[in-house]
Image (cartoon, rainbow over all chains, first blue to last red; front, side):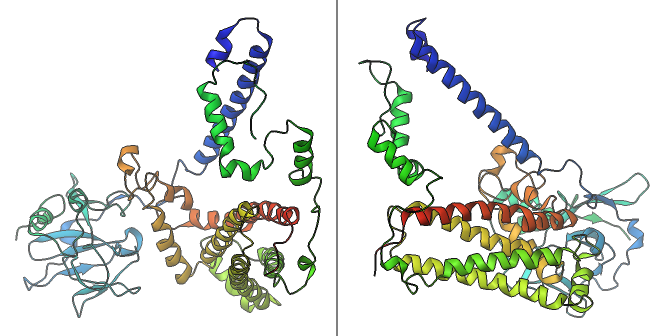
Length: 196
Length: 267
């Protein structure tokens, strides 16, 4: 375009070509803009979904198990937030109830102390580690923090589906926590230590 | 072949011109514009004969093409099934409301309370299964008779897009009953989209574009980060309006192209 137009001013065919190119470019720009606007239309600005951050109540609302090997699984936020609040003798942690295989919701079986996914049979222990089935990763943890009034604020990652950062950064897929990760999930923000 | 009359005389061709020549020499370009630039009377005739929408009939039809057993008519059966799906689908739309709290009960009502509702729903469902089957058999026939070969290669491409649309129509229909089967199938199916390179939040290179779970391609498909009411209405609109419209347009083109190219030679 440039060499044609700048070549000879007043040259009729060049000018015609210039108008032709300008016209088609304008149409192209217009269509590109319209296409982009159409694509953007599919990204809603407001979502009517559960908040990613919610108040899970006071730590004292969750029963402490008598046996140090036992973990009590609280299912009261499973339906609304898709998380389990886990209470062991040391403290509280929150597990995201999304099977890492294909994203279904596992169920808790207290008698066996296991989570089982109904779809393809992934089994998890109370640490979220895979003990059977096809799941490639342990269940993810949600972040826990304490509000000024002493209640717990749970953040389910980005709406509860985003992978826990610790696994993501390493770029490895292991169905069980590594020793390094075990240290990470045993402290804040993934674990709330409670004395007494 | 594809040279346009230049204005520059004997000056060297610019980069744009070289690019244009290259584009016009590709198979994809020749599939759309089959005769090249019509700079001779013969080529103008060829444009009219092979590409102009007014000339819908082929210039000639081989005797073998008129034999009834030649094509198995699976393409025609596919069209018939598509029309039947449209008809039964519209009838189902009178009762079904794509709303979280109504979808499942509406489907149950259709089955048990609406006169002839059960047969309409089952016709819609089984016809959809049959359409997937007939499309695949149609493609097998086209493959085994070599009908995908030039000059029909572009129509094969259109056909493959139509196959994808057929599968997508089945998939978008899956969510609509809003039962456990469809809900989790669509959960799993759309999770795959999040692994798309660049535009899926779990896919490779997505971090360079700042793709998150709430702005990736899966988000655009289901209108949220989880399967919910937005996903339901989107599946419904794509299923009832969007995809059938696209498929209809491509089908018209597909059939027109079949007529233009005539039938392939006998086996």
